[in-house]
Length: 532
Image 1 (cartoon, rainbow, N blue to C red):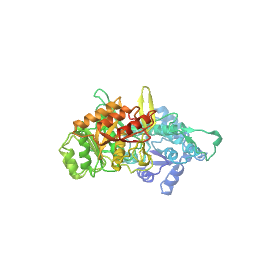
Image 2 (image 1 turned 45 degrees about the vertical axis):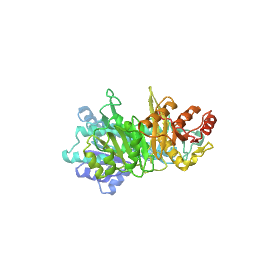
Image 3 (image 1 turned 90 degrees about the vertical axis):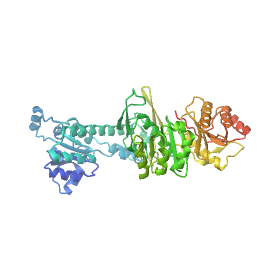
Image 4 (image 1 turned 120 degrees about the vertical axis):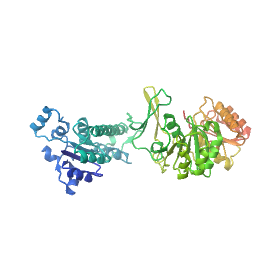
């Protein structure tokens, strides 16, 4: 048996090669990999010896040769193929171990030159991988270090690879090639080429929206059905999920997550992780129906549940602090579909043992930082339309206090300003048109998804009344500006004394005058948060 090893990432390759050698497998290799194996005392034959042709053009040409591809592509079951190999003195290659030049890592570096990007496009590696993967019935193709152990286990146990494993390796290989080619296409079609600047140090400007978008996602699981029972569905994740995203979560117990569970859980988790203080978010049908901050998980949950107990029934609950025994006992008193938190104490897990159907999800909070990825957020949002896709940068804007502009005679108190910032954060995650009343670090009434902002405000008021909460002396946030004074009047009539809105309407002055007339404070945030 012959194995050809040619890897850019040499993690684990020496140990793997040593194990192959111990099994009596002849080692072939190229360039740096061959030198490394030789230094480690392993008998290795350079590909140049096999091809009788030297590596050339700085390693650009070394494996693109009939003696390599013939050895990979020949079908062992066809006498004509084997006769052709014999005629031309070609040995079969039975195991190919290849990982590719680090193109993705190269272009991800700040200041990457076009020359560096181009140089890190692998040619021979993908060609060999495709040849081996196509001939999967005869050749095992290994494209990642985490496959080494499984391959060795079968070789040591049976002296060969099973059809099942070879096919799985082939699928993984073609997937890797698709990802690699997609990354190259994404990069090159994003380059804003400027011929006059072309030199070895040229760092091209790149569009956030390339000429071709090549999305690649890995299936997490098939789902029982989609949004409705007559629809089929599956859950996919990014190739490299951001830390603190729902795709990194681990289900500790409960029934299998449904399509709607995952969608609502994501809405809740994205909202709750935006708070620094202990917070709880309860989501129903993609909208937060209760949000609150507190001194701990128990208090935050109690306040959030109080907003709208009716909607919270069968809802999705997310906390940004560990769930302890006290919080678990309180939450377990209601019907909950999914409960998410960074951790659960042993006491909390014991409480939910009696609620075997409750889905517990453990998700680590993101580390935080200066990028969307470090914050556990998507860099891009996508929306499917008929035979097309709308792509946009994700709404990752975070309002800071210096950005807030008071536009009325009356100034918000310090307490009101704190509640305004809280209300604004919540409104960002409520479907448009959004109206959110808050007081004391909790939502008092949430109106979502209406065609009219007036109706959203009325619904928020109705929900507050149903929950036994007063909207008197509350603050209110709107996700978009008030185009007329009637939007302001309806929230003030409901009891609000302080209003946050983006501003930017042609009738801003009319609305400011109305706020002064009604004796309320109003601030402009300068940013809108449509969420459709």
